Length: 172
Image (cartoon, rainbow, N blue to C red; front, side, top):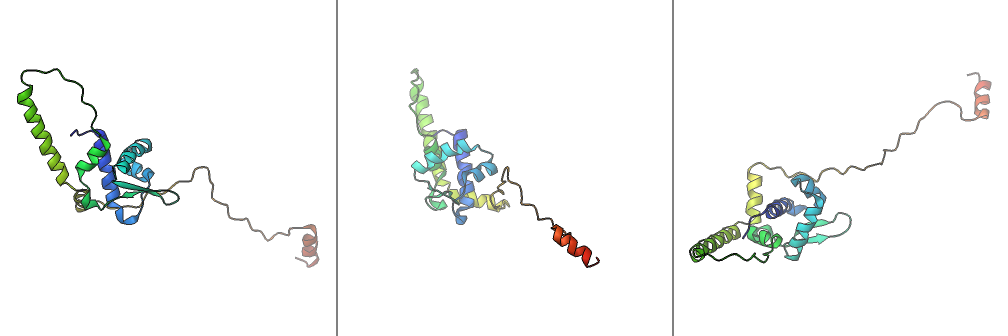
């Protein structure tokens, strides 16, 4: 199992989602702002996570992503495997010592996988809460190019020639 930046970002985004799992679907844009990950990169990651059955998407207003399963049932290993699909390993030149070291690397990989399978998304979210993490709402959306409606201007001046004449006739 490889530990990559792609995997790191996916785990961070999934923790963000787990922290907000009770609030419904979470927009990728808000995750991107909080985790400082570009929206296009998150879209790629969440496409893989959705295909692996780890997240569900909801379309339309108020839509976004939510966990497909409860956070205690999702392991870090599952997240990493979903976003870092095993690629065909480049062919290596065989050396005499490969038999000796291959057992070491295979054993290390097995232990690393077992360890990552033992860490749940819930435990990572709970760690964040224990450290004092405050679950904030999504950042306020800023409407670009829209100005607030100005309050109407009110005067006591007459609005026509007739009203002006009436005002003078009354001796104002």
